[in-house]
Amino acid sequence: MAPLDDQQMTARTWFEQLRDMICAEFVAIEREAGSDADFDYLAWDRTDPSGEPGGGGVRGVMKGKVFEKVGVNVSTVGGTFEGEFAKSIHGAAENPGFFATGISLVAHMANPHVPAVHMNTRFLVTTKRWFGGGADLNPPIPYDEDTADFHATLKAHCDPHGADYYDRYKKWADEYFYIPHRQCHRGVGGIFADHIEGDFDANFAFIQDIGRAFIDTYPRIVRRRMNTPFTGADTAEMLTWRGRYAEFNLVYDRGTLFGLKTGGNIDAILMSLPPLATWA
Image (cartoon, rainbow, N blue to C red):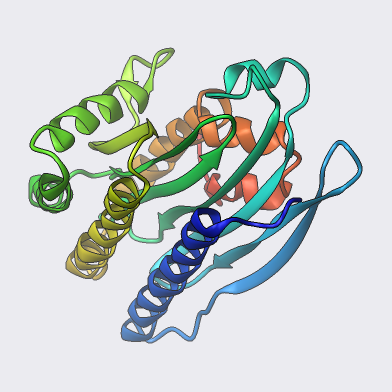
């Protein structure tokens, strides 16, 4: 993989810092619950189809009392897209060379009253340079208070960057996180953005604020719900909705496809899948 330029290194450094901040917050929640759970980190390397080193990443997974399974992964990879896949990537049809760095997070919770969550932000370079990502909440048992809190915090972090940012990217999330064959949404939404090009500093600041919004709101929601009593029926509802989550990630998710098509670490790519799910 070619040496990183200043923009690539700046993005990579932020995603790794964000990983550290999120993991520290999640471990703190486990300690509050009386658990000694911690993240297990595994570094992995990638070989490009050309045979040259193609970067790699670190997969982090924790299984605890509050977080039944949470994965927080960072990766920085580069090389050449293979075959027809290049045509599906923004700016790669003309030249299949690429660079990508980012963070991806999925949390599946032990208590059905605590929503599962997804967050991903990334920076890609082909013949173009762009950011993408977002966050969305996936509660088996939705609470209006939690949904409103999550969306209000995202909006507060979007508004300084553009008056239409929240509405535009919320609409994109509503359209993207939809399961056509089930005719339902994966959760209660959030924001989703891609191909954010132009002013690097302005766009990077927005991507950073997506991460900050996540830290500002999700741990608060977890603490609000993690001690709520639950029943067997609540657990059954959670396992059913986990099945819907798995279906979306395996059939429609762009990140899953990107990881598989670029030779990423399989365990890191599929860490988004829940530890248990049911299809009644």
